[in-house]
Length: 226
Image (cartoon, rainbow, N blue to C red):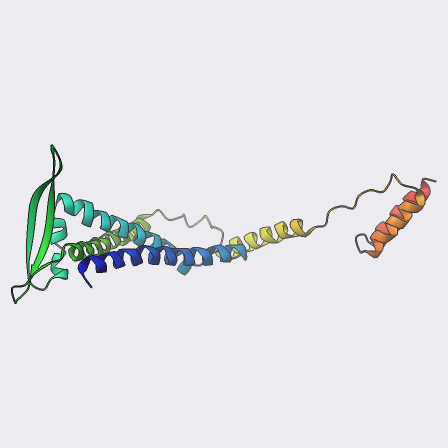
C-alpha cells in the first residue's frame, strides 16, 4: 500500500467518523429534550468537543496543504513523524500553460540503506494531525480561560435550578401533547328535528364524547325549545 492510498483512506475515514460522532451525540441530545429532560453535562461537553475537534481538523488540513504549499517548513516540521531517516525537500518549477509557472515540492525520506522514498502525502497527513492537535489544545486552553474569567452571577441572585428547568420543559411538553390529543368539538346538530337532535345527543353520550351532566343539560335545552 503506497502513501497516496494511505493518505486518501485516512482523509476519507476522518471526516465521516467526526460527522458520525457529532450526529450520535446530537441525536441523543434531541431525544433527551423531547422526553422533557435537558442534556446533561456529559452530553453537552461531548457535543461541543466533537464539533471543536472537527473544526480543528479542518484547520489542520488547511495549514498542512495550503499553508505547506506556500511555506514548506510547515510540513517539514511534522515530517520526522513520517520518516525515521534523513529528510530532503525538493522543489522544481513547471509551466502548466504559456506565461504561467508553478512550483512542485516533494519530500523524500532517505533511509539508513540509502533508499530514497517519496513521503509527501504521508508528511502532509502527519502535519494535518500535528496541527489539529495543536489547534485543539489551544482551543481547550482558551475555553478554560474563558470559563475561568467569565463573570459569576452575584450571590444574591439565584438562577433557576436544573430541576426547575426540567420540570418547566416537561410541563410544557405535556401541555402541548394534551392539546394535540384533545378531540375536536362535535358538530352542532341544531339544524335537525328534535328527534334527530336527541338521537345524536344520545350517541355522543354513548360514545363517551360528553358526560352525563352535559347530556342532561343539553337534553333539557332541546326539550325546552319545544
